[in-house]
Image (cartoon, rainbow, N blue to C red; front, side):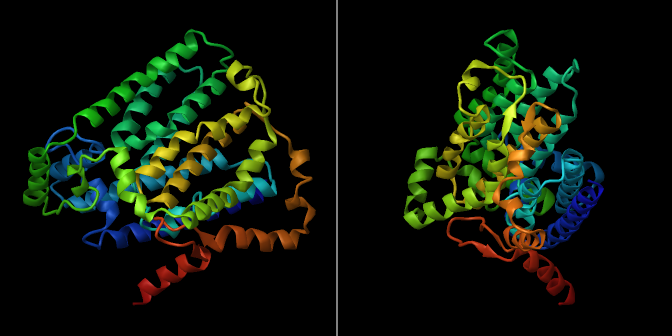
Length: 397
């Protein structure tokens, strides 16, 4: 167990170091997509994803320092806390080959470092807030209040999180051992109301042209920053259907087959864990009639289809789907809500091969491929080599 924990710690420290390096390099690029998203703020009025940008703006004013530097420091802080809490969640898991594969899969922790276009996009704050929420004891009087704060904050930061609310709902049902429709379940539904209200405001009251121009003007005149990419797209009023129609020409049978395979292959270890797991005490009647009650996890991922219709960042969507599901699964496992049948796991293909063969398989599976960020790109190769080589090349040049 100690060896596994040490390997995990080393792995996370290496990825965190690469994250710092690439974040710094991204901030040297004038039109980087990550920076554009963090420039969105409330200077022109309330708008989606504006909270973190407004915090950066206020900090920049208070300390009278460069806005991009403030954003870089905030992003670095978020990644530091995320990796620290991730280690806290994943350490001391039972030494098992399939557990290892589910942690080291290239669509999980490695992905944003392999595809630096994804590094420090707003969903990383959602992951961090979820991990912070996990720290609050179930019997704490602050738990209910923290849930309202958690769901509201993530909606202000990255509103597509609403497509993952069914999965979060199931987590709450299992974590609170709710067995029927009662007042405890009603409370959870009520606690979602503030975040859904925020989502409605975002939908029905988008930033006007004048408000957007005011935000652009403040960024330019006060901070010397240009509003581009994600920041510039705020002026678009397109609906999900219009976005789907706009992206339709990019879709093809090849794209669908590729991403189905990416999801199935990249998630296979976690799917195997879920298929060989059972709930300990939960008898909630909508779940208990499923052949495997934990299949509800897969059903609750269906709303994410809307996310795939809205944008072309399909590799990113796969990563977000996996991270949220993995965090919830491992949290329930560590809290003893889930029984994992290790005997069944030991009879799978991964234990029928010799240890040296497994090591070769592990390296190939975890470090020889990853999905590209957008659907126009094919599958990328050898991130385990590409990432350190890219760092070496930048430093030597």
